[in-house]
Image (cartoon, rainbow, N blue to C red):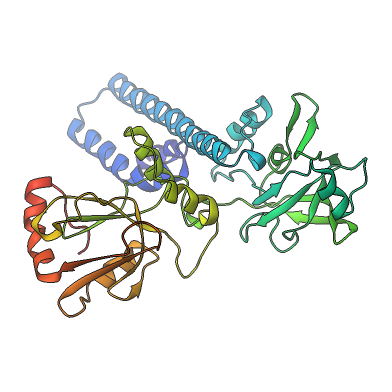
Length: 370
């Protein structure tokens, strides 16, 4: 009975938090009850439950707030990178929608358009596409395959209206409470993944009314996940070379550490970070180098995008680990994306293996390869 009550209490916590920590929390609670034995009076038992419930409620509030904060930080970063088609508006209705969703056993999340667009303020461009003087609209430049528009919308379509709301030439609409806002909000506010949404578009000179089904775009679907939940960053260290998968937290850590992320990484995120790729699901980078005799001459390298290791294509850290298990003629050969200053580095495989103990002893970092 006690276990059932405690598990019910844990439902207040976000799903990903429960997946990571619920088992440990239950074990700790059982240990507290076991240590108390039968010595607890009714009043003491009540105090224990009250303290436990307060701790869980406090943790639930903190974790839900943290999820909202992460989503907000990511939206702000995306807004700075792509202001033409991104909205960050934590209006009261959206906050209410988030809080209502957070109370459900399974967090449904927010729907996202999965679109990028070009403003249509140039008269020649508007006339070329066949827009009337009284029409607004934005030209779609990208339709993500896991977004709400996939399978219905196409790059080159002009988005004229969403659910009866006219879209102007800058991608904004007239919100009844907050004035001019980005039309991205129309895919989110008051709607859930799975809801239908009516759109009006211009395609090849023809005006059409189409319907899409809204989708939630999960961070793990993107080549560069905007955030990582429930675990620390994964890594692999070979010969003192530190490899990681590119992610939102990686770029944030670079900024928080007092250095700007390399432009090539920002460009990679903008060009292909949101695009799912089943062959190369992640972008792997040489994050930094822990100086050692095995990597002499490479100590200053960092933030380089990896393409192959020992002749094998690298699209994740798992690919990289498998590739390092097969040296080529006694050497590890790492190839980088062209245009980064270093096209290739080579390590002596035996020396890289011998460096494990040195790196572990000097820097306190495991290899992350085994």
